[in-house]
Length: 316
Image (cartoon, rainbow, N blue to C red; front, side, top):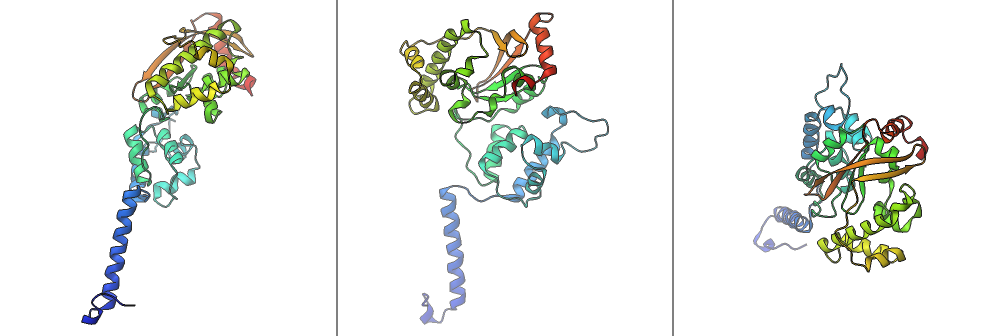
């Protein structure tokens, strides 16, 4: 092989080494231009370990035992919160694990109650580009998470602006079922409302027509806010193609309808409950924390107490 400068007596090995270094630099710059796909294992390991050690059990809704000596959370506790095996999480902290996927990083971010900025930092450490923020984000803010963690004896849920349930307390699951199990467009209660008749069974028949109008009016407002091509716009088109009722209500162009703060549920085991719904809005993520309470001493209050005992048995 001929190299430039060969005729002048230049060391061919030195020139070849220079070409190899140049090739690596070009590859590095090309990779950076296309997007970050190189994991920083030491940086990721250090960040995860420091974050785990800074969290206390009560920060994430766990009970602190009397003989606890661990600084912060245990690895197995974090692994459970992140829905992964202890071995997998431990390898990430040791810097010997595989490159976690974006979905896995999202699970870690929620389990460790990271802020959006911290989540984006972990994504970059793991070799991924953070997603654009806005109406597509499922990441729950740490503040909203902390409030939900302290409502373990109350029906409460965090939902997106499209009615997707992101998290529920155990009593909320007992009240309405596990709404986080759905995938695809069925994650949205509005989609299920118009495409799955069973979605209405939990609500009194005399309120269903009004609730249909509320769902359509609310979705119309979000479509207007987010614009053509948004997830809201796609969802509206999807439902419109499957529900004549939706198309008829959509044609009325209603807006500004709001559900009442008093919610009535028809539970298959305890019967009808009348609950007050309080809403806390996270404007940055367009998430809402819904908290359902009953008047102390009322029949609905007693039914909620019973529901906390029988749990999800009736919904299995």
